Length: 369
Image (cartoon, rainbow, N blue to C red; front, side, top):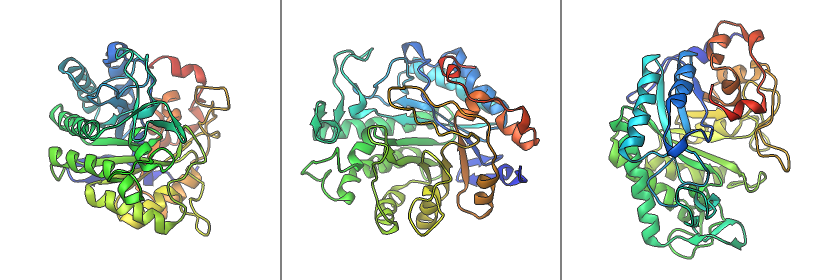
């Protein structure tokens, strides 16, 4: 493997100071009964911090809105009992020298009525669509929109209050914010629909509300993606000019770091350039970008038709990742499944001990280790 020292250079932004450039990617684990992260979650995150990860971004944790959750046993980020549990996670990560950011999440139209504990509450979406052309969720009113914006702002304020080091807004993968971005699921005729600028208004107002709560030095991360879990081939933008028109208003609203979700980090985003999505985002905004997508494994994570769990994968070379970082394409690298399989992944890479890394196996998803 190439010299990996660039992965272990320090990084600082505002109040955030990281010992290295390795980020734990957010991964839903469905292991929080009562929507409260338990002792197993505390240990799960602590071990990755002890294993050398610079910044942990938590699994998606739902904001304080009745329709935010779409899955059983996912953690919530509101209520004193839940926040006290998250504080234990924060303290454990800090005790190992790591930093942590919660990923604030609203599932939007991905929610189906029946998911507990909210039960019969239906999912909500900008135009009542979870997939283009099919209205089967509640259409969000202006009051609904205001309530969700306020919920994200409260979540960010609570993140700072309990000692988190940054906050990430989940704007990717076909969840609520992304359903506003996506023309296929946003056909509103008011100020939140229409042009890309108008479809971005919801996200911009969330970012501005979050920034107002956390102040100027507390980093705000936005995760976004072209692809949707409803449609892997979906794209918000088709060329660099469209990407610039999309990104700059978000940057100006207060995003400090863009977390650019792709399925395979090595794939170029547009013809005529080798830059990936994070590379283009950094070039356009001038702000730090996180790359992600099958880092350290030889198979992307997307399940095959009929499957519901991530693909298995064997450890793979980091040579191309390192070369791209050395070229200044992106600033931080998020690692997912490889960190589920190997809590000590970062330390092993730093020690040039990659031969001892374990493959990721699907069974690893069913418990927290």
